[in-house]
Length: 439
Image (cartoon, rainbow, N blue to C red; front, side, top):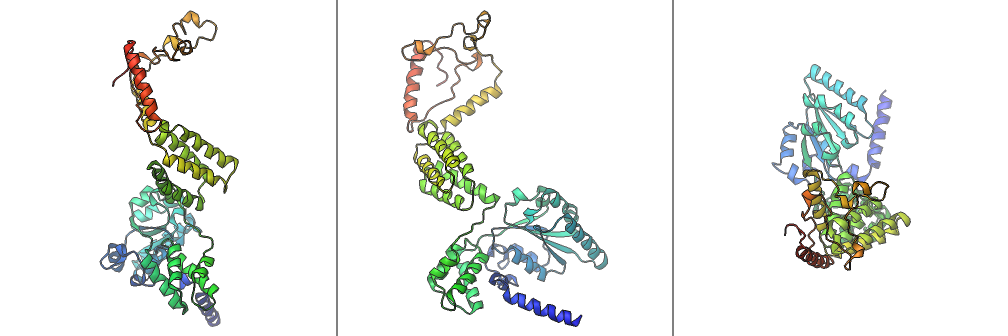
């Protein structure tokens, strides 16, 4: 047995020495953690709770490499409670039940509480999360869940309501610089200032990513100071985190940029989402919707361009179809904007839902089947093409909604032409005795 312990200890030391740089530099205390001053700075709320060992169930939410697991490891060393780590990637309901039973024994036999740290808590499905609820609710377990995904999308509402939500922010450039300096010191190495800037610029606020890239760059440098070229080769393919919350936030930014007539911002978000693996067909569908919702008749070609881009995605596929999407983004962003079609449809739908159901006027009813004429269908219908201007003033709606005006064109782009045309028509209709509707 002693021999086994000796060999186990030696293996552990060797594994620790060979561990990735990010693992070797994992902070051991709150003061060692870089970033998150709003949570763990002097007097900050999370720091006070941890140091007093009064942390209640919590969800640590933030992008990768912001310190969620590190915070949990610090809690493990600071608490008098039993600390049980699980990963939702590999654990199941059986594992949770074993933790609950262990917590019950620890409380009954030793009067000792239990903290369950559940990494990647969003990987637990609804039923697995529900299995935690009774123990969290009665205080048998203090749950610390870590997630990169938006908890309001991925964590059950009852579980979330029983937990405090702590949001971790990406590290800023100065904080990442501190992390790089620690990595260089740990490896007894150096780097050119431009290389440090490149490392920080590529990290997206992710401390683990910056250390992983530094480790590869150090190997490429082979003992000399790390250069920007070493960093570029180490991070040749930039991987981007793109979870469900990122999806919704970035799509929102994308649509709002195009709606706001900023083609450069629209292209930026398009490029970023494509680089993150977003479905090009989804982006194309969003552009088709925007073409009608936010451009409408101010530029009738907008829908044609957006539809053509969507067809190109299906016909050509990526990566080439990204050019068609980019063209649609530029066209829609630069187009005059009008939501008057959207407003008009909303008004019409309000009448459909809120007003009594009206019958189709007899002169508009289908008169093509045998016996229709005997019912009066089509009688009195005036065929527009028989008239010089190609339009006829006649009732086209049920009587109770006749005169309700839905579409009011703006003075932007092509819609100004439509506004003038409708103004003239309505004046003519008034002169002919028709009800033009409210002004």
